[in-house]
Each structure stands twice: as structure tokens, then as C-alpha cells.
Length: 117
Length: 498
Image 1 (spheres, one colour):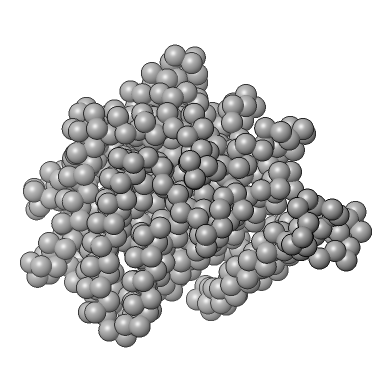
Image 2 (image 1 turned 135 degrees about the vertical axis):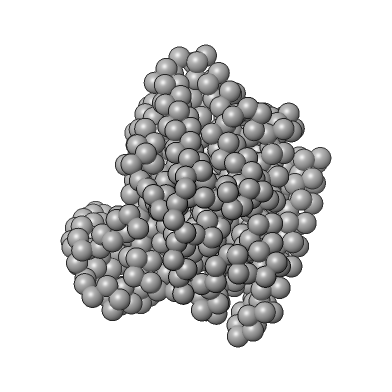
């Protein structure tokens, strides 16, 4: 299972970066979304996968008797998902606004900031 | 902990006063005075009693999230409060009301909240969360107003900063997988036990790239000159003073606490610093827009600080910290000055400017002090850190870095001379008054003083940094000592009971 998820993470990273390199702004956003999902999966994997174990240690046991699921990565992912969701929502609005004002979605056309005014 | 609450509290109050601009303007200035007072209190307290920690929710380190106020963090919180105050006074008059109406001040306080949080946190994931607060508020600030080049700058700024966060998060995930902890002090202890050093190096590089994009080092800085000149000057001022510096803070913190003493990392940081200085200097030379020149100067001087980290001796780190302190104040002030010049002349292209010395001799003298501090004319503030940096790089035999430092300083001198000659001394035609804003000489006295007072305030502080260099030098030496020998930080976090 871990190897499958590792490959999926790799694919998400690659696809995300590929999309970010494209010229269209919308594809930039898609790339950003894929990339952030890849990162989330990576954090998930970094806690190692334990199938069907609760993230709880019984109160009576002083030592770890058996493997338990690490709850921290899941908490981290939850935070990261919420944050990246907010950022993506902002990005979509920003891109729509930029498209309306600039009348182009081609990143190569975005070069007025390089000119001297 | 307190500076955070102040900003959160006031930004919430400001949200309620969404429609009432006069109320918002006065509340924001009061808020910044309060936060300055709190920051001074925190600084004095930490200076006298050593590192303070607060464990959020009563969960002890290394399990819960801790806030750690060591001297380094407290200094930066103090500097944040100082430049926040100056910028807020400047904002009230210089930014157009149409922009302020969209919750500008509320977002501004969220930005300061994020900065303070990033400085004070002792947990690496929490650092990521604060970074996100910073960048999302900065996205709003940079795109508020919605002008053409502003939105364009915002898209570029967004794409690269989001990328930076994700790379940082990747490094963080890998690091957690290796060590199983997120507390920075605990990481510092456990990272020594990790067997596979290549993986640790990969993490370090991911962290370096993530923070490097934020602090605009050599191959990753292109978003900065493309976006910093587009928002109003007050916004650029807070970005220039603090946003890139928070990346530098994170770099210094992570590379002194977690990834330590590694020849590979040191040489990587040093070579990147040299390239940053050189490329920033060239960029500043060829531009004619005042604000773009300042953007490239930021990049150039980031190289100075990073290089000090790369040399990695106590003297070098002390020099880098001194430069950081000096740079925050001066860079904030430079952008405020560019806003003032824009208001006086209606443009920032130095080819069209002139006559300012003739028309406003007193303001020009203040600006001259700032510009000379930037260059580092003794005894002003840029001079002292450069001595430490020169000395450290000379002793360690980092001659390339030494050369780059001299080169960077020389170019800065040329640029400042150029600015002075073109903007202040040159005779120029009076520009056509534009209809977009009221010209500076038509403003009331109160409004004019609100333009000038923040600039004088920051100029006085940089004068103090220059003339009272002994105090600052003692301070940075102590911070550098604490950073180099990170045992005191670790002890303060992990053994709160003793």
C-alpha cells in the first residue's frame, strides 16, 4: 500500500509542476491544487501506514504494547488542507479578476511589471 | 504570547468597524502604539530574565505547541512593532480611501499577527501556519485596489509564494518522517541520531529552497522586483521591511538550530549569498524606477545577511544579525521615502525627478541620513555590521564572499550617489499635477506631518543604531552566542520545570 501511495505522490508532484509550467493561468491554479494534494499525501505517508489500528493507547498500559496509528500527520494534513483550500479559493478569485483586467490568460503576456514606468 | 493577542484583538475590532474609516484609522494607530509598548515590555523582560516559553493549552514540550521568546525573537518582535507603527501612520494619509475601505487595516493587523507569530513560535509546523497567515494577508494587501500591474504582480507573487510554502511543507513532512517530532528544540536533539545523512541534507535543501523563495535569494528572487513596486508605497514598505526578513529569520533559526555545522550546507549558502549580492547589485544598477532600484537593493542586502549565516562563526552571525536589524528599519524607511517622493512629484522614475533638495531642504537632510545609513558611511548604522562581516570572512578565508561584500557595498554607494544626484540635485521641469491624488504641497499641515513623522521616526532609530552601536553590538553578540551554542534554547524549551 505504501509503495502505491508513494508513486501516486510522485505523480501528483510531477503533474502539479508540469501544470505550473504551462502558459495558461488556469492551468497554474490546477497545478497548484495538484501540488498541494501531493504534499498532503506525502505528510500522510511520513507517519507510516498502520491498517485498522486506532491512534489511542489504552490508559492502563505504560508502554506501547502494539503499533498504533500516529495521529499527528493526520492533524497536520487537516490543517494543511484547510489552509491550501483557502489559498486556492483566493487564487481562483484573483485569477478571474486578473483575467478581467488584463484580458489575457497567457502568462507570457504578463510583462508590464518589467517595464519601467 | 501577548503581542499576538494584541494584534488579533485589534484586527477583530477593525472588522467590526468595516464601514467607518475614521474609526479604523484611529484604532489602527492606537493598536500599533499598544503593540509597541507590549513589544518593549517583552524585550526588556526577556533581556533581563532570559528565554521565556509558553506552552499552548498546557501541553508540555515536546508534545504541545510552544511559543519561545528568546532574545532573537524578541528583538524582531520589537522591530516589527516599530516599523508597523511607522507604516500605519504613513498608511493613514498616503493610501487612497477607496483602497482602505476593503478592510485594509484589519488585514494589515493580521499580517503583523502572522509576523509576530512566526518570530515567537517554537514549533516547526506552527511556523508553517504563521507563514500561511502572513502570505494570505500579503496577497490581499498586494491585490487590494485591483490595478492592472498590481494584479499582474499579485499573480506572480502568489504563484511563487505558494510554491515556497509547499516546498517547505514537503521538507517538513520528510523531517517528521525521519525524527517523529515537530518541536524545534526537540528536532535539534533528535536530528543527530538520524542515520541517513543524505535524507537530512535533502530536508535541509528543501527548507532552504522554501525559505529562500520567501527571502528572495539568488535564483529564486524574480517575484520580488516584479511585484514589490506595484502596491501602494506603505504596503511595499511593510513587505520590504519584514516579509523578506521573516524568511531570513526562519533560515537563521532553522540552520542554527536544526541543521548545524555541515560543510555542504555552508558552502551552498555561501555561494548562493555571493550570487545574490552580485545579481541584486546589477539589477539595481540598470533600473531607473526608484522603487525597482530599492527592490533590487533588498535582494543585494539579503545576500549580505545570508552570507553571514554561511560563514557560520559567532562574529559572522553577529554581523548578519546587526545587518538584519539595520536593514529592517532602513528598507521600511526607503519605501516610505519613495511614497513621499511619489506624492511630491507624481512619479518614481528617477529620470523625471529632480529639484527636491531645492524645494524641501529639511526633508532632504533626513532622507540623506537614511541613504547614507544604507551605504554604511561611518558612523551610521550600515557601517558596523559590515565590519563584523568583513572581519569574519577575512579570518575564515572566505575571500569570494569578502569580494562580493565589497562589490555590493560599492554598487550601493554608486546607486545612492546616482539617486541623490538625479532626484535631489538635478534641475527638472515641474511635473504636471495629476488628478489621482492631492499633491503634497496642497495637503494640510497635519497630513503633511503624518507623511514626514514616520520617516523621521525611523531615521532617528537608524541614527540610534548607528551612534549607539555599542548597545546593539552587545545585543547581537549575545544573540549570536545563544544561536551558535543552541543548548540554552533547547534547555529553556524542554526543561521548563527546572
